[in-house]
Amino acid sequence: MGLSDRHRRFLLVEQGLGPAVFNCAINGAIAWALFRSAVDVPIWGEQSVGVDLLATAFILPLLTCVIVSALVGRQVRSEKVPPLASGQLPHSSWFKRSVLKRALLLATAGVLFGAAPIVWALSLGQAQAFTVPAFVVFKALWSAMLASVVTPIAGWWALANVSR
Image (tube, rainbow, N blue to C red; front, side):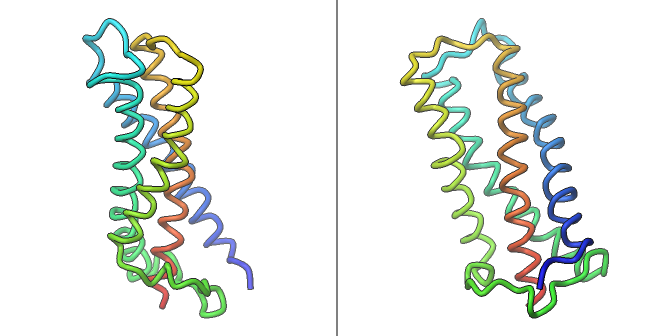
């Protein structure tokens, strides 16, 4: 049994597109606030592209999972989003895990698959420091892409959990 049109819209638009736009704006603003007085943003160092991406790749999925889990639970209880039918519930037991365990898994995956390959490629390619405006745009777009992958997963897990 496939997902209903409402569930597809919920996961793709409300948990995909909306969070991507939100995270683009928020993370762009955070990058600007952190680096606005810098001449450039080095690839490595205390305040750098590498450290910033690795930290964001952990924090964004962690906070997203915690926040989305609470919001989805509230939306289902208030009947804004219907629960999944029993035939739509995943067979995996991961959706039954605590929010913290799901958040830590997503945070770890964010670092391993979202930031580490990019940081590795920048290092391997001997990339030079970013200008501050270039880094702000890069960080905003990168975090939007990360959020567009992470948030629907967190939303689906939360929806499955609250639908039990």
